[in-house]
Image (cartoon, rainbow, N blue to C red; front, top):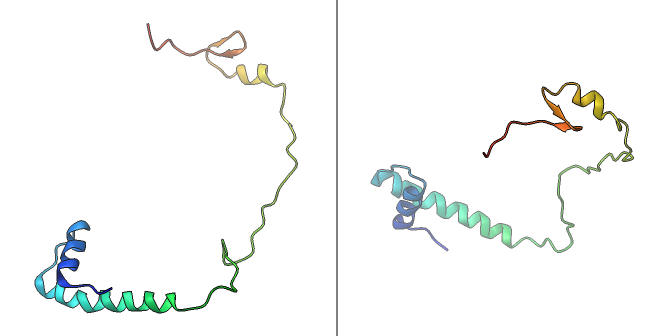
Length: 95
């Protein structure tokens, strides 16, 4: 795939970048070089390489899922401005 000046103008328009004709002509070979590098990467044999999610091996530090602060409803509701029947009281939104 190669890029021409019309494609560069289209990309610049989509990115909302103002480019002069000289800048467009200078950008054509640069974008073509980048596409050439991408094509070179496609030639590399990666069939024996395992997929990675990170560069370093990461493992999640898991802990036991235990309840430590249960049964403190009364203490929590003591901070509420208007507790009602064991719940937070809120102002009526719809009449």
